[in-house]
Length: 566
Image 1 (cartoon, helix red, strand yellow):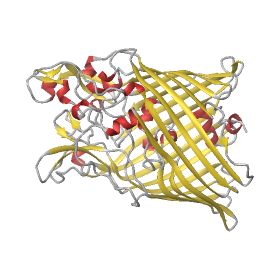
Image 2 (cartoon, one colour):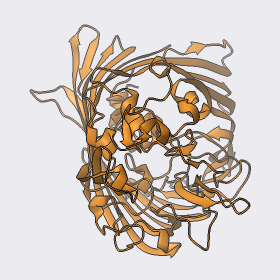
Image 3 (cartoon, helix red, strand yellow):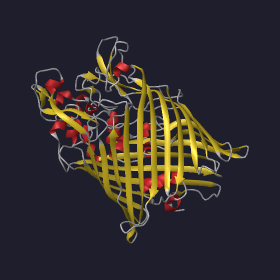
Image 4 (cartoon, one colour):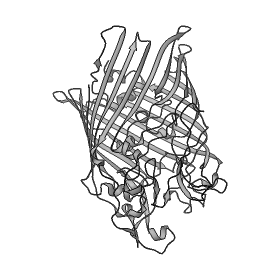
């Protein structure tokens, strides 16, 4: 069945069609068994990505010591910011469609990151060169940054499964490392029912704006049980045996955020060392969830009901004091024992596939200052609170017009409301808390009690433009309409991410995409290193405030990607 045929049948297949442009390169799996009861496949997807900076450094960004390492890594328009080759290898074995296992892994090499850390060659303040405000010891990338930006490999899926029946109803159990994605959120995963269900690869997400949240999910060791209780009611339950944090763009890389974040760097402006992170150990711990779905015939859709107990995968960045030495350190901390209650509804309405979900998170991590509080000198926790998240989306296929043959479109809106602060409210980086938000302004990056953001994808397609060649023009925009999300990983008012490109599918096997990626966030005022650190005014000027990722405002870039499967 073609992907365009699946497009008409269900929301899940429509989401896949959206992600792959309603048609995808065929995967010519290597068949490794002639036994009709045994199905063994080995697939490989080879990708190559070349990226080029589209504009030079904005001094109001590059002069800020927190952003200078990332901005000066590739400082000129035309510099190659990624030159990456990768392979995704997938192996599946299934016996009689009942027993089986799956293993997948990826490996990569980026030739653009062969050198070390680069920084602003000037002085941030008289007698204080930028090189002394470094985020990496010796201005050399740490092992984590080297692994994910230079070369490395990852084990992804690694699980076994068994299909069986309970009272004549289909059931299945999976044990091992795998991904599950609950709820209907497509773009705004940080506000979705899936929040914290697994870590996300936001390094990949930053390099590929508009990638759907489920594609960024990192497999996680778990026990998953699924069963059909009745023809219209199903149950799923999972218990996790592994923890890993979300991967975030690392300091000193082209799409890095602040220089000292996150897993790779080990210094804050050359002076404050990295301390031990606060996170759960791997192994069985208190992360689990249950889902019940109900699909009555009269509804023409599916209700979902969810309960999850989770550990945050997004970090607070906190300061702490070593009780033995009195020395200050900075570190990452991850909140645990967060409770999530959710409900979802997806339904086909005419030619439109619609999705809706609402969730309540209790004791979740809120945007926080660094502290430390007198009651928590070691910096174990940031601010916590309760939030309500609401997400709605609609997906549709494009009918033939004089301008395109077919295509797809998606729109999603996300709303977040802070209900209350439950602990460490003094650290909440929000409007109204003068300690952490002295300006009292959302335009300085302070959180608001609620936020609204919108994302739109539009992908017109032209079939057989040349013999064996289909073209499409994927476009994406994400915009913060109102407020700054009070919880971690949300959106900011006025911040925009946008992409537009041209994709070719050649002989139903080779994918080539040329894409422009752009960013804009609100920034204002000017300051310098002296004023920002309580010293006499001095040093080059840079933005005094900003709302959202202002460090991306001069990072527009062009990417060329090739991929094929065999």
